[in-house]
Length: 85
Image 1 (cartoon, one colour):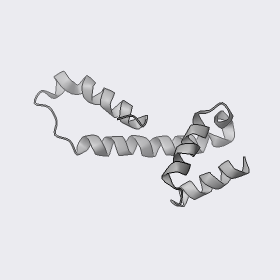
Image 2: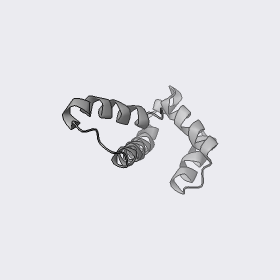
Image 3: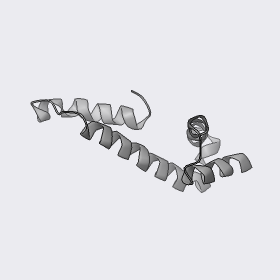
Image 4: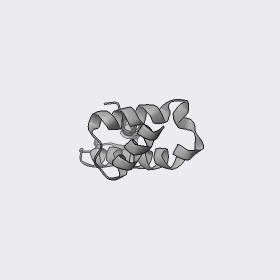
């Protein structure tokens, strides 16, 4: 767990490599990563992932009929926040 704690500290310092961030995310969704001491980290990382998804969606033009396509936009935002494309 010492390695994970170090990775968390480096995540907040913005010095974690992409590979390490991917490993940290994998840990946080694993059974071991569900421990209460990691709740805050999961919340912050989820908040930033959702923010990135919103920014990506804002940069795209909206379809002509927003109401007709809103479920598609929502589904796309959810897939982006889960790290899918």
